[in-house]
Image (cartoon, rainbow, N blue to C red; front, side, top):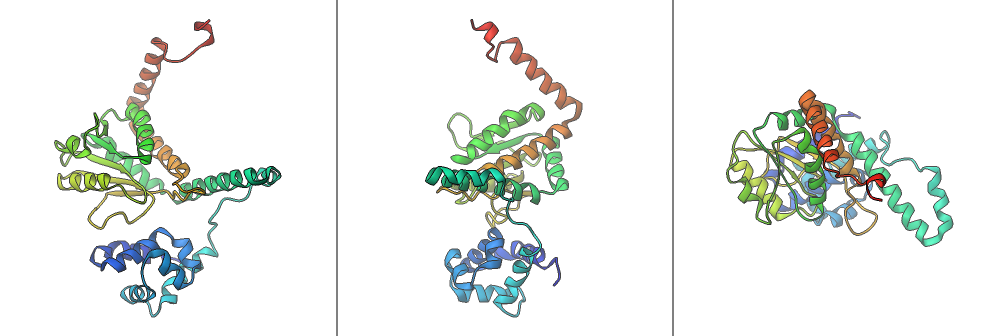
Length: 295
């Protein structure tokens, strides 16, 4: 089997999804976001989880030029035999079983975090991340937006990133709307948006608004297909499936650390000097607790 067939199929789905019917869009998005599951699941399971009929999945296969649904699924199934999907079980995980139900809960969460981190780091292209950092470093301004749980990721990225990238602005400011702060943006600016499934309406609207203003867009998300109306320069993906009801941001935290590393490196001596200046300022004004000064 052609080892590139799976990646070419995903690329085709991303290119064509804007022209699909609503049901075909749902099917295409599910396959793109759940490639490992799609390779293993029977058609009825995939249809149920995607929220479509089995007939829709068959139609999607035909749209993509495959002779059957099984022919569409086969490259995804084949990829699973040559790719490691999850982190190996560490020895300490076995010892958690002795703690009964509490140990099982902790083991499930810990192993899930390891798997998310490994899958995220393994999937990142150094060239893509370096180019995304270059685009931010060369922009007039870089706006950063997120809401709800994703806001924690944006706040940390801004806290560290502004030392290497002084043009970085976290929006919305002062409890307003992101579009208020983006209203004076233009073609020389970049919007970096962080959002995960289910995507925030405010964040998607901010992205759409920024595009119409001519701004370049970077998405940090858990899906390669966020909205067919968006045309991001870069889509940086980290899975967020949690062992509990909510998303787990362990993998996304690792992705953000990679972006920050590229920003600091790309910022060169100016970024290094700025970071050193911030550190000196904090020490000068006793920002850090010390036993010596608090007796």
